[in-house]
Image 1: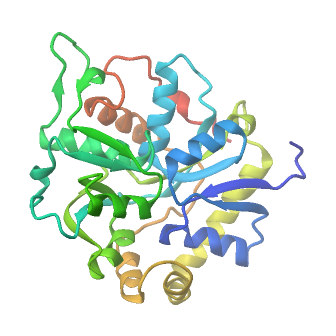
Image 2 (image 1 turned 120 degrees about the vertical axis):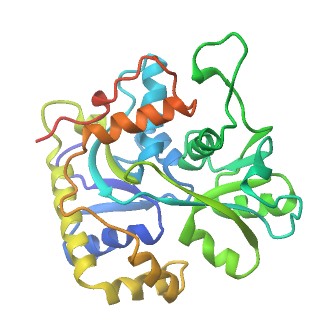
Length: 310
């Protein structure tokens, strides 16, 4: 690719994407924005195939994807962490079908069928974090690493989209799934699905990654630097124009005005997106190892997941 070619940027078309919209609308972001409603796991595949150049998605998905690649001997992994998009943790709502009386509490889900968008996605990773928090992880007999845990669930059902996840918990194909709280809330309000509980990520929730074609060396491609600068402007606009943000979220996205206003109280974007705190990545790797997503004592190099800073 030449420097004149606009970046292809993958993002999740939810309320968190509002500053990206503002960067494009008001501050001349020169990029092709490609929505990935199925989330971070799909963007990892797209980055590795060259379909997109940059992804804006969930911390746990990116770190798990790079960690698994390193464990498999792939030191490239296809992308590097280049920036921080959201500083606050993410509230994952735990949902089941509207008419599933046998599922009363989160503890009812142990040994059940978990629905996920993709293997390696945030919805998949957080299923293991939930199991770790609840004490559901049981090491396989005779095996000393938590990578080889007995699964806490009877089945992991890959369903790709949020719509398919909602259908599956009502049909019985899955017993529960996990998705961001405010994205789920509309479907609690209309009675399509039922909330069982929630869990917060123990890390800042969104990171920006770039293909190693753009971030594997002493400096980032200039287009990535420009993207991060434009996102900073979009975030500043978001912070200074909350009514415009509410209007956009409640008319162009799948949220009520009331929910948009409540979400604004819970989220914090960074003043500058450039860079990633290595401690956040190290801590995320430690928790993913504890949860059995990555191997304890395995060949995982957390600092190597981060692009060199400019």
